[in-house]
Image (tube, rainbow, N blue to C red; front, side):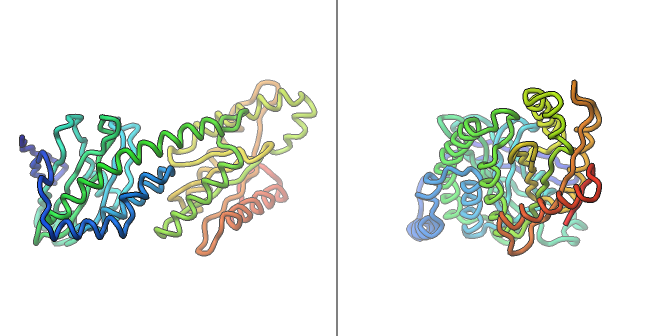
Amino acid sequence: MSVVLLIAIGLLCVTVATTVGLGLRIRASGESRIGELAGGLGYTHELAASLDPADVLDRTLDAVVALPGVDAALIVLGHDPSNRTAVAEGLSDEEVERLIIEMPADPDLRAIEVIYRYRLDEVEESSKLPHAALTVSLRADGETIGSLTAVTRSTSSPLPQATVDALDALARRAGPAISNARRYNEAREQAELDSLTGLHNRRLFYEFLGREIARAHRYERFVSLIVFDLDDFKRINDRIGHLGGDAALAEVADRIRTVVRVTDIPCRVGGDEFAIILPESSRDDAELLADRVGFAIRSQKIDKVGALKISAGVAELRQNDTPTDLFKRADQAMYRAKHAGKARTVAQ
């Protein structure tokens, strides 16, 4: 079965050829190369062994980019554009948007091959534009959960057959591994959320902070941290009691959720102290979010409590930072905000 589609993306013209039943036979040389890649990258065993969704996704992307002829890789999970996850290696945000292809649920449809054609002036501006992409389905428990895409920027030759076969084999392993890791993570988070606010608890905060810092060091990306607490909250507990104080903390958590982004990780680290981990974000981004959080909390009075204000500290990851280093700097910045008169954000 084959289908030919025409896709228009702005000025981009794309010819799409759909191929079913990838890799009926693997040549001996290709099979040897695939075996070397599988053993060296560990996707044969290590994908299924990990229960960290981010780790599984990173390993899958690394494995794809290491294949012959591949310059970049993309994973898309989910079918709803408003609730879809896309992670990539070697692609800009604009390229990711162009490369996202919705894989049909048909289990017989194994791959979509896309050839990109550009206007001459576009090619002259950048000779490293994506030239071709091969997208295969990620499946788990008999359902399509997303797609895995290998991208080449070369205009001289298509992806070799060994790479096509390896990508298909990788997708068959990665789909169940990603699904299992996400289910485990969701179940664990439900069991380990702070019972009062519904935010991640202190233990998960340090686990997530360590994970995001490791990823940032690995890929040379930004990570920033906001630490804040409620000004004069002890007086509230003394005045209306701890049950009233607990209700106020739950309301604060609800307001935090209204302003954080999908990728941000809000946590309650103890008492009236909160933290927000911001992957892929600079100190300036964190300062802006801290100000939005402060406004959301103080903009409307809480019953029996009144208007609450926060003092916040912001820090951006440095080259040799550990999780303790980053948290300590953000925490110190928060106390500087306290000493400077409260109800403000200090970054360092």
